[in-house]
Length: 367
Ligand code: SF4
Ligand code: SF4
Image 1 (tube, rainbow, N blue to C red):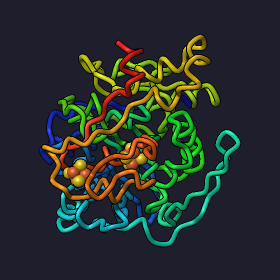
Image 2: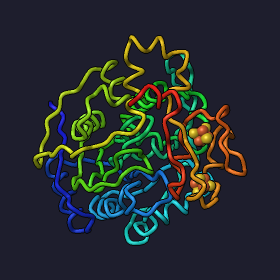
Image 3: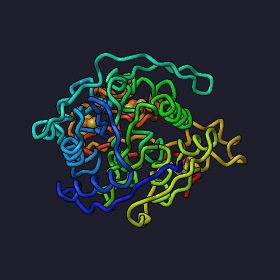
């Protein structure tokens, strides 16, 4: 049977609008579950207010907590969560959801199981919360760009199921974007049987330099499907991107083929002038066979780099704490020799004080 994707208009985050849209999605795709409980997995990347379009909007979680008959748990493990997840719950609006509904907020930092994946001949070990194997996952990504994966959608959202600080440390094991994207594909293969449903918050989206400091835009849709790959491919098309423009989708389709799917619901609109992140032009250049040999020697220099803008910095030290290789000093200077360009600092900065810029070589080569 052909897989289905549903796209449904949802013009704002009023509770009645979101409830109507989600009910339509369940009518279009069906909902079956014989489970006692479901784990809602939003994108809770940074302790930001819902109106910044960095995190999955809490009204979506509120509506699901009310209309799904199962017991609801809400959990994610963002980069700095091991230092206090409560501030994320509070700022993202999920504490409110838990106080108004039957939902329970859970930490993914507790009991976990260690997995090993062989990524291009390198063994990568990481823990996944046991809650993922107790309750099926209802995946709730935000439609955003990402400077390492180009887009952050369903498959990338599973990265937050890895417990605690290991996410940052994983970056030290695969500083190359290609390797990170391969990891995202294999992590998806490992966990795909645990995903019961995917629903993307595309009411307010983010383009340019996401996932936390890009441009907020209104799009006005919810997009859903039971197959994460199909939903991600469909969303890439809405953004006007080809499979080969989105690194993890290019890797997935080369290894496992391109799945067929049928689109139901409202007529989809391509997002006007969607602007991919700065890194996407660099990934395209690295793909050119003629250039790749010339550039191999300088792969580390053809890059995007984080730059702290001190006039906007409020010295919260989140970047200092999250850096997996201690490349940021206490006086907030970045040591370029130590920096592996994982961009964790850029993602967690709550005050948009870290910008990303092209390295000298990238500025020279790219227009
Ligand atoms: S300075 Fe930022 S980009 Fe560089 S390694 Fe540290 S967290 Fe990653
Ligand atoms: S750059 Fe951002 S994260 Fe780092 S100390 Fe300044 S405000 Fe905090």
